[in-house]
Amino acid sequence: MEIRKKPWVIAVVVMIALGLLLPTTPILAQSYDPDDELPKPTGVEKGLTKLGRGLSNVLLGWAEIPVTFDKKLQDGKPLAYLLGVVPVLGTARALMRTSTGVFEMVTFPLSDRKVNYGPILEPEYIF
Image (cartoon, rainbow, N blue to C red; front, side, top):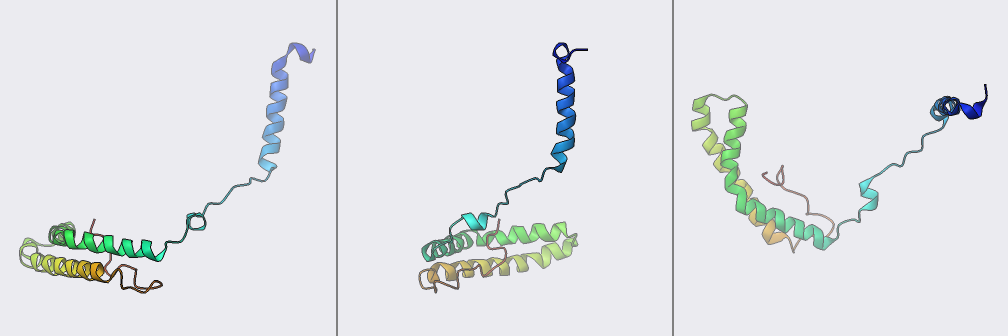
């Protein structure tokens, strides 16, 4: 049997050799950490983020009422609770989110560059 006449024999030998050698070779993977590659935000960027968060909270503060209703409905609260307590909770949260938004909009240029740029409310945006 001559190897030149049977090319599939060479292919099988190569496949077996690769099958035996590949699992033993070390796998080199490159790790990726986006914090290493992204530049740190500047004070101006942090201030503009605070301004945008405040503007969002002022414009969408009213949405706390239906969001609170939906959350309590999904929790399985009774109808009397949904109609009596939830509007009060939603209104209180709406006032809190709107007033926090006003505070952030007013204080964004006055904040210290190292602190005071984190969100006051969690979640920082309503949606």
